[in-house]
Amino acid sequence: MTLKENFYWGNSVSSMQTEGAWNEGGKGKSVYDIREASEFASDWKVATDSYHRYKEDFDIMQDLGMNMYRFQISWSRVNPDGDGEFNEEGIAFYDQFIDDLIARGIEPMICLYHFDMPLILAKKYNGFLSREVTDAFARYGIEMVKRFGHKVKHWITFNEQNLYHIDPIAFRVAGYLEGDQTLDELYQIQHNVMMAHAYVANYIHEETDCQISGMLAYQEVYPATSHPKDVFIAREADEFLNNNLLEVFVHGRYLDSFWTFVENKGIDLKLQEGDLEVLSKVRSDYLTFSYYQSLMVDHREIPEGVAPNSYMKYGQKNNPHLEASEWNWQIDPLGFRNILNKMYARYDLPIFPIENGLGVIEEWDGENMIQDDYRIEYLSEHMKAMKDAVELDGVDVMGYLGWGMIDILSSQGDMRKRYGVVYVNRENHDLKDLKRVPKKSYAWLKQVIQTNGEEL
Image 1 (tube, rainbow, N blue to C red):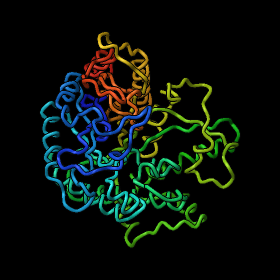
Image 2: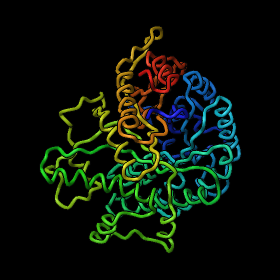
Image 3: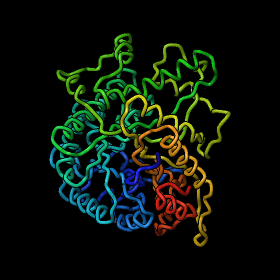
């Protein structure tokens, strides 16, 4: 076996990290638009200005040979209040955006939500803590499928949906603005988000010829030692933060361990009539995930009675066998291969890693090419691990999408942290000229794509 002839090579981004134009084209405010700049974070008003410069970026992707681009529709750009009347100017922007991708031979994949809750919904309902926001998302998502499904065949609802199951990050990404961040609220958010996914996924399968996947931020969790408790909690973390979602994505059900935990803790999910029937119909056409690092957990650091959703909050430790990036993300290509194997063996669906990359502090002197051999090494080793999963283990892998292959703002708004093979000439507080400048890794990646992964 080798990589398929129609293997997808491409790039993934979010809207708030790329678009800018925060107050143009009829866009409403999202929770990101009110975040202020700090020492190591930009505001979100310009990002990399792809709203105005996306054709230049598409030309770069075409030159690289990419054949897929996973982008996100900004909910507040097409629906300024998050619900109610749609903004036709915003929809027209994405309509042309999609056409310009297709004209360059680049297949679009749409993500519907990447943490940028419309501000009105966050203030009025506390984000996905409320079923009103679940229903609003369903109306928004289904409308986007109706508008673009005739030419966009690949969809995901939520970027890294298991983040809505993890304490404390779930509250930051769900549009939750105030409260005590309780366990009951965490479980309410994760169920409401899963129902939002289900409504859109079921519509796609019942009404269109499009394909949809649930997506995880899959981080392999290793036990810190061979102590049985370390092994147990590493398995439990995997079960609650990964497999419980995958079971819904593939088989339409939460795991029995999930239900038992909910019952034992007295958690009220506020199930509505018909919820479980809706979930039972959920299926995925393939499985997508992001991968950047593996983690290690030590049971001795976890207080008694803590939910599996909080294990990493207390018990995460550095793995002494792995090197780490400047951001202390531990580099583990073999973990990537292991995840590809686990997902495929358990669920027997094509697997599609749609985010991977190395974030590094980089500066351009305005003249000489950035020599990012470290990025070439990282990407090469992960691509080799992926190829081993295909060629040695028999995993059905659809493609490989790097994260932010043209530099974008980091998830925290820090322009110092760069993932791209193309440098974007701006800093956190100095926009400069936003020029796109290829790094050394650009020519390397172009050769990888041209040879369909044969020359790494």
